[in-house]
Amino acid sequence: MKIVADENMPYVDELFGQLGQVTKVDGRHLTAQQLVDVDVLLVRSVTQVNQALLESANKLTFVGTATIGLDHLDERYLQHRQLAYTNAPGCNATAVGEYAFIAMLELAQRTESSLKGKRVGIVGAGNTGTAVARCLQAYGVETLLCDPLLAQSGDSRQFVSLETLIERCDVISLHVPITKTGEHPTWYLFDEKRLNQLKPDTWLLNCCRGEVIDNQALIQVKQHRSDLRLVLDVWEGEPQPMPELVPLVDIATPHIAGYSVEGKAKGTYMLYCALLKQLGQAPTTELHQLLPALWVEQLQLAGIPNEKALLTLLRFVYDLRDDDRLFRERFLNNNGFDLMRKNHKHRREFSALRVANSGGSDVDWMLKLGFSGVSR
Image (tube, rainbow, N blue to C red; front, side):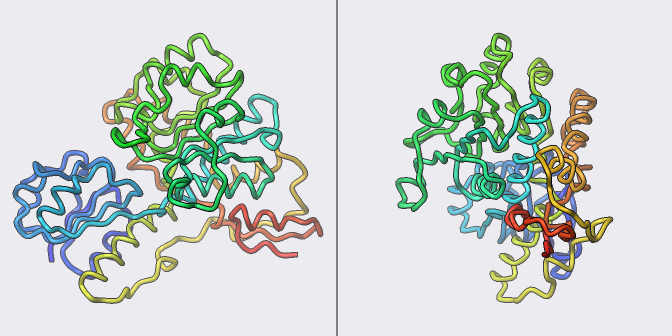
């Protein structure tokens, strides 16, 4: 079996090497010729899987994308070719949720305010949006959800309209797929009109797709709305964000909100399990066997006295400021955006750290936040 995989997918050799010959490629510049006589194709969101790419894929039987989205796959064509394909829904949800939560705490410190005193609106309540809500609710922050498709599907949670969310929320975090058609398209969901409707001092976070916000309109609005705070992990026109937008953003990163060690490993592992199922085989490797130990095994806490202390603890696991600094230094470099993504291998999730309670304080809420091993 011949397997072609994006070079930035981790643990491909450890998992798929058991099944056949693995060739790693630059997913953004993959060509049709590279897929001749290939049985399995493993990609990320930077690869457009369509008829042009697959025209010479004479032996292809399986396409897997280690992402939650499918917008880069021509599903109609794959179905026409009767090719099995799958994504990895939820693989990076925890990572995105923790990224957004940390970013909000960073903004709170910079603005000398408290996240706990704000109302947060989450647009898109699927896997990633739910993960954000889980972190916020564990910390005691009020949240509102907006997801008309889930509301129509009978989801039992309470939802509000986008207009209500914009009117009532101090913080808005975006977690929707990119769609251009249907009753609720998300392309330029936040256009100039909606951006101008944001409350004074609103924090706006985008961790889904760059084109959910009209970036040119965002530049225009931000130039006369200095009160708005922005966290952008995704950008219109990736991998070449608008240079004039970056200085206007409070926290800027190169589409790595979901790039935890755990999240990326989970994405690859889900594709491994899906291919094995198609082959009628059972997994011989477990996910936990792949993950390295954190450099420290356990911390003992006497409690979390305030929000600053919480942020200090979270920085111990992942310091978002490092990626923000590197982005500003390197995004204009040749291939800088993609190189930062390729080399982003250090970030861990809260679950990698075991926290022990040595002071008798009630820190059980940290279990809900995602930390491991909290004890009384």
